[in-house]
Length: 250
Image (tube, rainbow, N blue to C red):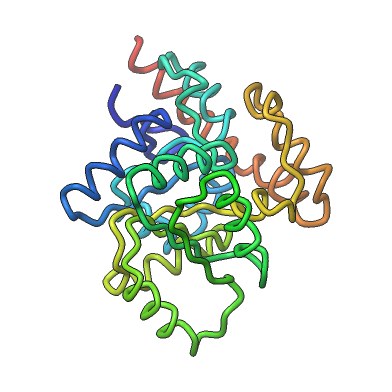
């Protein structure tokens, strides 16, 4: 299955194994790729932020990170499975395991001071030979050059940028020419979950599309707008998809 257009954005319905394979190809060929992702929050930001649109235009791969998009694809008649929804809470462990085996270096940029380093320690407990460095995401603009220099010296195969949407996408777009890495991943709060700074939703809730409810209950002040207000602005896009589907079938 090729690239789909859902709610006015492009997505690639890929599995975790397929994404790992794309990273392996980029490392092998010495190329630089951007692996982005879409959920309902990013769809909302995409349509309201021109810089987000510019970022996604640069992305080589845009995987699905949200069961609502999977369900919507199915409703439109596409054969998309739950295995084609890849979230970093699950993917990070597969990625770390492969990185340890293949000797890939990972650099994680994001999170509050001390959180990313704590997550890295936890990952090394599971994968002792994993090569990983981190830097928190709360840095001043004048520190940006030094961070880019640190990344360049380390030369990671995988750079994970976890500063939340849309800041992480803006940062990648602004610094893309200076970033030296084979695969650039926008990873959100991935390491916050690994470090235990944010409670991890039960995985069964993610598989049936109710992970958002757990997150909302865990962080209502931060997330109420994302989950209770933003989806209403996607309604015209939803109607547009239905109209296009009807026209194709008529």
